[in-house]
Length: 579
Image 1 (cartoon, rainbow, N blue to C red):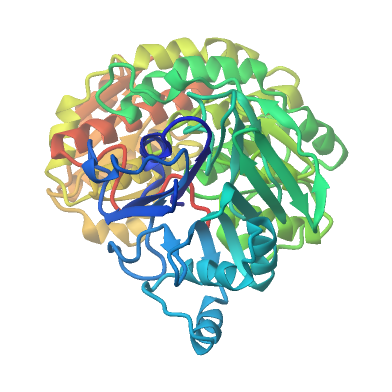
Image 2 (tube, helix red, strand yellow):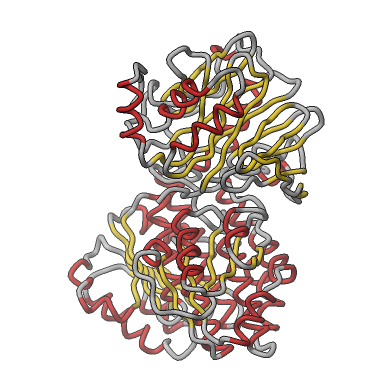
């Protein structure tokens, strides 16, 4: 979570860093700051969002600097707790993502040695440690200081008298951008895209000296080479392109994302493992977890492979007795809980594969193999196109293992998703916008679709929403049904259709309004629901995709009607890099 940006080059650093921080806003933050190095270290930091113009930074002329967007962990959001943090002299400045687990004991020791602290943060101890170890060589000072740190960090430091940025990484994301006479560092690639396509991903334990001429990397005191990779994202990928919100833009990109991912993603590493050991454990969080639940239905029905799906946040603490391959699903490749789950699986000697959207991310270096989606950068905090891209990989995997049984579904799915985007959801939005709670229900693979629909609604509209297997409502949740508690019911042709109709009638008998999702022309369903939303096509596997996209649109337009912050919902971060 949070975001960091560093720049060493020929341009004024402050405006470039602030622009980079704006590109990281989707990660979530409550304060921001920048420090530049000219003749001396200058710091500007404030609580709140980055304004359109910051006159107070115009005097910051340095061409080397660091910046940060903070999401509070240690200490409430405030100007004082915002990064960058400085040492006692004000000559050293540090920004940091992650959590220093032993900061309290370090702070007490430093205070006993005469250091004066200004903030409540764990990060400030790093500045004071560097101060103690600094004797004119910032690399050596950082190298010595991180030996005292327990926890996760991606940090950038500058010091008067040392014309470089020094970075260090351990279990927190950091990427370097190599430009023409300028070098950048950031939490992810989005601030780099305007300046370079050449990137380097440091590894845990790396200490990096950053100058306009490039980056020199040390690990355990010895020079190391990290590969330079070319990214195929471009700066237009992180612009709204005429859409009101990033989320809506990304919803409309889904036909292309599905088409490209289904054809370009290579599930071979997992195919090979599952042919030897035909059972799979999936670990994931949030939306990726829901994609994993859908994968279970796909793989068990189409390929006969048993699948277990676990919350990554729980897997580490209660590892099941598995010996089969473990698939870690994470959009960013930096989700802390998922990374810990991979480590836990490796400790049991399970083969591990990562499914991610980001080349070079932490999970790709930790797992034995990686499969990449082709979603491009996803800026909206609420995942949409990354979810569809994950499903595209799962459908391709099930097709490969199931002898081509999904080839027709995969070939036409993008067309059906495109048709669905024209659906009018305003009548359903009027119902949802008045609700204090909403239930989403489905059966079979539409149960996890309902879970994901509920998650989208609560994330961006702030309406309480829960997803249920439809048959479970009568085991308690019926007590909550009222005329003010609408239910979104996914009812499509298949083995559960008749029982879903019965479930809907039971819901109606309790006075709740029902928004039904079904096929166009389904007169029976239309007659029993209050609002009828339709999806195109006859393919039951494609219905999973189109129903999911329809629920994204419902959540988006409901949130828009309520005037919430759709792209940056309160209290949430795009990439959850701490436990």
